[in-house]
Image (cartoon, rainbow, N blue to C red):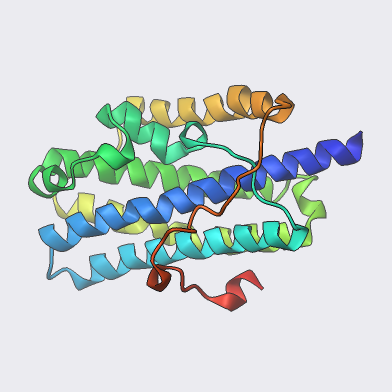
Length: 227
């Protein structure tokens, strides 16, 4: 029973993380499109966001290889387990895929709001990794511990470019209610969705990898990071 509990917990944890990492780097492509149009001469900002995108892709690959080593696919979780998905839906009233990139390019308040959402999401992720690195079940898996240590090192640079843009353009810091939304989304996952998924006998595994249909040039990633 204890072994089943541990396997189920790690299975679900890895499945939620691999979903969020994939959602992260594919969503950042839209942010990059907007930034390159708004500030084509800001090489430092563009490079920082490109690094964020590359790190998210690297993290996805590490979790994919973690599953591959076990000879199984991730559990089939969807956008209801995606922090950035839920945050965008609440803050913009639409899904990430439905965001109007052209509007983000032309609308300062909209882009500022997106920067705050990303910054809060990344800071939340950093705090959660710190908790997981001390989790007794996670600590029993050496490979998973290595993955989370790499994420812990990468994470602080991820909110920096968005905070930089806000400061450079007179944008405000997140208000209490935006932080409350972030906390609500995290609590919703932790105390409602995670237990329901954990106990669901109908939760199936994915039939393919999330990046299976992506162009080959986007699939390149550092092998050593997932070794």
